[in-house]
Image (cartoon, rainbow, N blue to C red; front, side):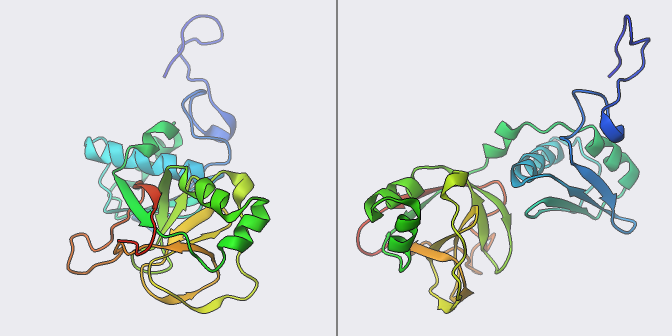
Length: 237
């Protein structure tokens, strides 16, 4: 973008460290790095920035406004773009990107019926200073967003719970967490798609299949998917 008049003279105003024109560049702390010849890694200051950039990239890709990219892979504080045909052009675009955080909530909505009878529900309620019934209300109130996937096939790291409710992992992880367990650790909520070791705090359980190889796609959750936990009694069906 160019600016006319005094102090403009048609020249672009630069942001700090060459981040692009003022008012258009990425948030402070965003770094774009090349990874080999056909990939870029964007480092962001916080998970919210990852969610916003991922949504922005997918929207641009759907509109045909993005140079060819085979994969867009978000993580806790990075977004990897792999299979890039024109890395310099894409890097220039990324350095002038200003994703709209509101656009990151436009994914499909999945409701997760949850029986809140987890082994750690009372302990988490104690950490929050509320009775277990209120802890259920607190956890089921927000609309969550899948920030990224990992750990196991079908496992999504969900953001949306206010920061004041963050809890630590268990001091001693469990050797086996049942499939369908709804759990909490740090800023994230997750649902274990299959039985596996784990150190997250268990709040409840769901019968909703998170990973099913007979389904296309096999994973129910993908980055950008919105999640609502619905408290139910008895079997989580």
